[in-house]
Image (cartoon, rainbow, N blue to C red; front, top):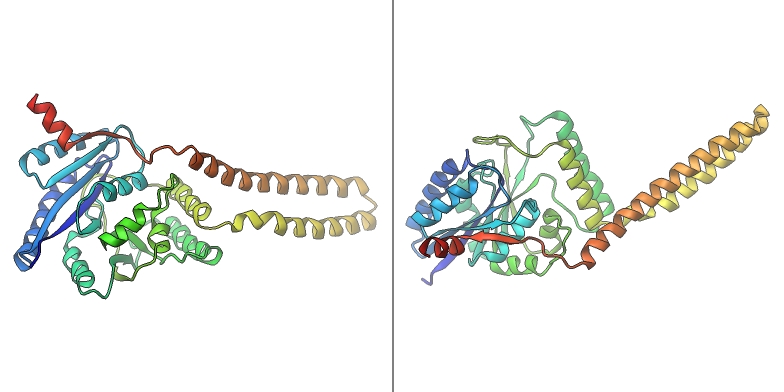
Length: 316
């Protein structure tokens, strides 16, 4: 059978504590796959997203010990969205797997994903979290609310609980790479490009080591990125609020006549209308800002070092 290459893409940001554990686990899983499917080859593509600990040092060591271990190290922190894009752009595989280094995405599921995609019935196999046990309740509430909202206001449907952990064909990878927007919301992109996807339901898993860099405010900002990237509905707020303002104006006018307090009614109406205008301007400003960033055509990421650059540097 013809050889097939699976690229395992791992975004990394300050992962020095968990990388040795991840390395042992991914080697164990891929060795088992290779014994079952001798035609399979693997490469491990790590994306160092401007880590401030010894993540890069470990990646250098791994790449010297095993040529299957490759890495791209950014010149600074560009964010996980950029890291995933860089991994897909620099990998060479017939298939690509994206998963986190913290083992919250269990590598043991990769063989099952491969079997689904290899069957030809699916182009992608991913995981869908069905429980949020161990996660703060407020965070869980807003996460589930986000999926309900975005699926109501966007034509692109995003599966509730869908994770970035997935195995894709080269065709799907190329389709994702064709979308070169600067403001990236990959969960939406995965859905927008289409293709047949099989979701494997999983329970919430805690990090194997280290601390997460995600918090409520980062996730809230990320959710707004998704809404602005895949829906223009917020631009309709001005029409909705204009209708509400008209109704409020009528009510305040009646109240002012009944209570003989014309000044109070006018003041309330002015404040109400002013707040609506500012809100609508902020929504419009967000879309203009996103457009501004897109038309600059800045790169999604900048490479500071790769395993090839590091190897040549050591040789010289």
